[in-house]
Structures are given as structure tokens and as C-alpha cells.
Length: 199
Image (tube, rainbow, N blue to C red; front, top):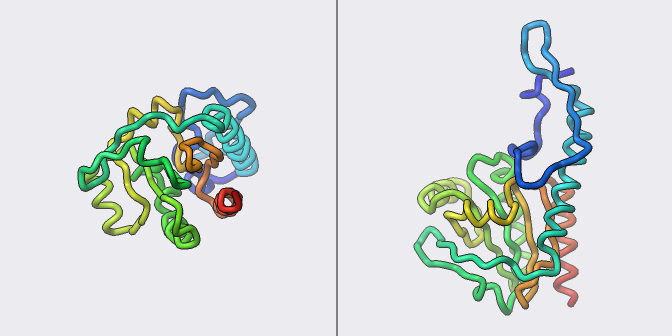
């Protein structure tokens, strides 16, 4: 067994209490001789995989095949973006927040991904304020169009763990939902964007 701080390299909100209930996730928490909280690493990783699969499946059931929900969110310059801005182009929307370590870690990979799809739109929705996002992306470049002040929108649409990617077609219909900022998720994300490109 290892201390939880030494073993956790998963989304910061991995076990957040959200509007979806996650069955079949059990982690035995114990205390070591020094009173520190410890967990079994293998058990944690299995629970993480289960959580990721269940959360992604539930988001897919909620979103896929339906129009992206109505929104009106500002970017850091004050321009307000709406559903009408989705129409006519394939759009990738990434959800993130500034306290999410995997979200920041994946930014360079997402920036690189953009280069392969010059005809697509790339947006990011965050619950944080425009000022907070502006400060972060000045130091850690994230080239997606940043939509801010999105906490209510994200909560209302069950987007309570981060990062999530949604791919929307030219008609504004959600086609794919993927959860997680790891290399495996990025590969699946690229495959999904390629499928959109082939249509």
C-alpha cells in the first residue's frame, strides 16, 4: 500500500459527488501506523477505470444524438458566444477548470491536435471567471477559444468532472463524448475527429 498522495494521478475530481450515481465503485480506505490514509493502488486504479467508463457512458447517453444545450457564455474579451456560433463547422468543446491538474497537463497536446484540423472550431468551457482564465492561459497557452463563467451551465448539464471533450457536428448535434485527459483519451479523440472529417 502507498499513501493516497503518492498514488493518485487521476482527474482531480475523480470521486466528486455529482448528479450521476456511480455504482460498483468500492475503495477500501485504511490508516497506517502513523495514522495516514492509505489505499491499495491496484484497487484505486481499477476504481478509476470503472468511474471513467461509467461517467463517459452516462454523459454519452445524456448528450449524443441531441443538439448541444443552449448557452450564452463570454470569452475573456467580453464577447458572448451562443449556440448559433456552433452551426456550420465541426466543433470540439473541452471542459476544464483551473484547479484541474490533468486539464492543464493536456493543454500542449490539445494545442497540437488543433493544427491537424484547420477547418474545425475548438472551444473550451470553464466555470472560472474571465480574469482567472486570462491569467492562466497567458502563462500556460491554451489556444482554444475560451468560454468562461460557465459553472451554472456545466452543473445543469452534468459536466461536473474534468476534462470532458464533446464533438459537435455542423448541424449542432453532439456526436461524441470522451472523459479524461490521458494519452488513450487523446487517441480516441483524434479517431473521432477523423471520422467527422471523413463525412
